[in-house]
Image 1 (tube, rainbow, N blue to C red):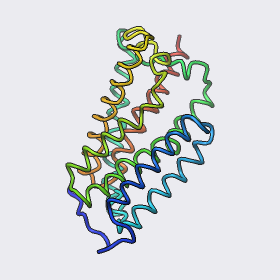
Image 2 (cartoon, rainbow, N blue to C red):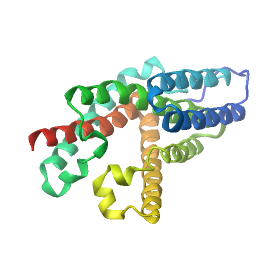
Image 3 (cartoon, rainbow, N blue to C red):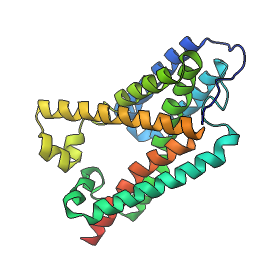
Length: 244
């Protein structure tokens, strides 16, 4: 489903300036969330999201440019429901198949109880991760790049930045995920390989998310898949620990 690039004829700032301001704001938010005040993410994420929407509006953007047009809500919700069901089926199969069961192990959530898991999947991930990342990369940034340079630049540009966004959060991924640590080791080379792989993987995931947003005409479709891949992984890991 193609979305038009319509919007007010002229914004208070030009698209180039809005893109630059968006990138700078995201860099600041990334450092804040991962290095300076990681415990404040439930405040910084919604505030950053609101500021990003303000930048889009100042550049003459609309709700449709951000993938939030009300006309697309129903279609986006249907896409999201199907994608969540597909991820659930894949994770269930992975959990039941012994060779892939170990992929769900994650030291970051090993000691978490049911209450903590519920908070992670129902509060932290939707508000602290999915809201900001989808609105930033498939919403505002994608909409601005599309308005200025077309769908290809919007997809590639937002996806590359989405990959780079994960550099700081994944610095200790090899230690947190035993499957990765055993495969690549914990040396400097191993860390670099894991980092490069994470950037590449998330960048490619960004392309998929962008295409879902374009075809569905709604941010709900990529948001649903994004939430499912993260949240259902946590739920699956918790269920496997509880059964052993």
